[in-house]
Image (cartoon, rainbow, N blue to C red; front, top):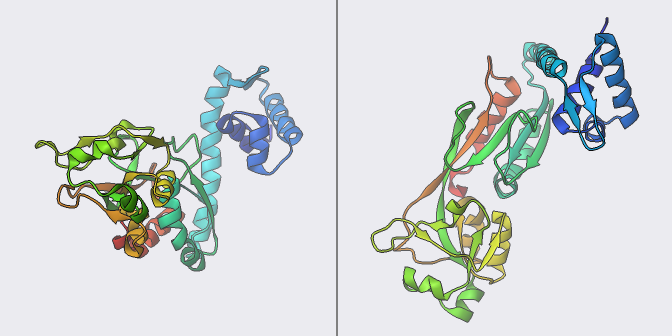
Length: 298
């Protein structure tokens, strides 16, 4: 039969990415090459693995069964390669890290140069996504998640916690003044998140409650977008210290309602799947980030 690793990679990549075109881009091949690899694989197995329609590719029942075996084979090959690297005490291979864009920009990116000097055999792939992702679906080794974890199928390593503060630019304060109480926030332009709604619950004491629900005047899906809007004087915002510490130090953003603001900190975890022994490339990244991350930025 002689099924090749190239054919297995083509098959799993098409399933993971959802199309032959996306798989070709992911593997650096042509769409015709991926299509031929799939045809050869189905011919060798004498079965149909994928149903091709005008809109999508869909796994057959046989394809679903074979997919699990294909993943095991690919994982075994990757583990074998990694074990050879471990014998030389040099962690190696591709490491896919996913994080929300603000955390990637303000925390991870500044650590990349040092990490690459220490581990030159590791190929970093950094991806950003503001939504909680499926690690298997996105082919991600490590995802940085901010806030409480709800997925019990993953393992997590706490990297730190970042305090939330209410902030505005000097320009905004000069034009509209600073609120003297939580109640006065209703008279101001408030910058909030489109989703989830929990991010629009600010850590402010209000009538003995410990959270104040705002109605955003201007909404955005990204914390970095809200930061840029706040820097330009568009309103008052709630953001974490990891992305605003330098702005606060430089006076570009000023904390407001300090006495009313509770000391609420968002946990920051690195999450990953762990079936057996944790891959060396994952371990060294987690160890490096934990050792070098500046807790003052969190």
